[in-house]
Amino acid sequence: MKNIEFVRPDEIEKRSFEIITRELAEQGITLSKEQELITKRAIHTSADFDYARTLTYSKNAVEIALELIREGADIVTDTNMGLSGVNKKVLAKFKGEAHCFMADEEVAKEAKERGVTRATVSMEKALAIDKPIIFAIGNAPTALISLYEQMQSGGRKPDFLIGVPVGFVNVEAAKELFIDTDVPYIINRGRKGGSNIAAAICNALLYMARDSQP
Image 1 (tube, rainbow, N blue to C red):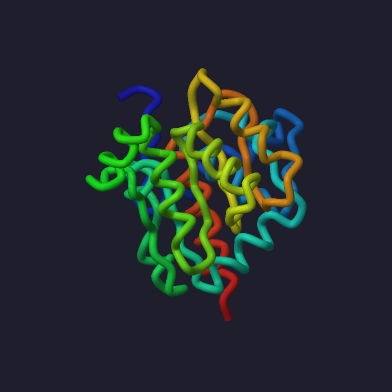
Image 2 (spheres, one colour):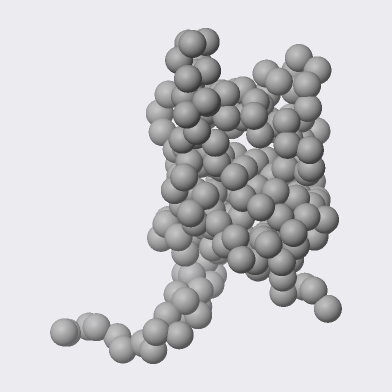
């Protein structure tokens, strides 16, 4: 048990964030007040300090996302793993719901018939939801591509985008599609990301919205 530090269960997360804060300071990295809790939660989820350099925020991104949550926006993920990670109890306090359509039989059938990915059909289905939507994409670059194509063809654009798919094929290019658009976003540039990171960013925003309530 050498070098094992005893930490009370209810203190583990607090201790983790103290370590993250210290190591960021040691690396000479200063996070903006607005973005700090989100970036730290991504690091906490992954133990990867690269997120302090690669997470990219559009202008007023956090403020816009928090306002959408307070207005009852829903969250749509591209994996059931991402869906399971979102704190739906906090989201429900703002009358929001979380969705993932990837496992729907109708989505799978339509995707097969059209020769496209389920992520593509899932995003089309999500865009039909009649309320503000925060898209949390952590796995499928085709989900980002589908959202972009819909927007470019005159369809609905995402109210907010968390774009953090992970991988090697089309991942970086799909993320870059939104960098110069007017869609508010939090995007991780490069190959890294994942459903866990997408959920972590959602939860950071949810906790910020909850804790800023009167």
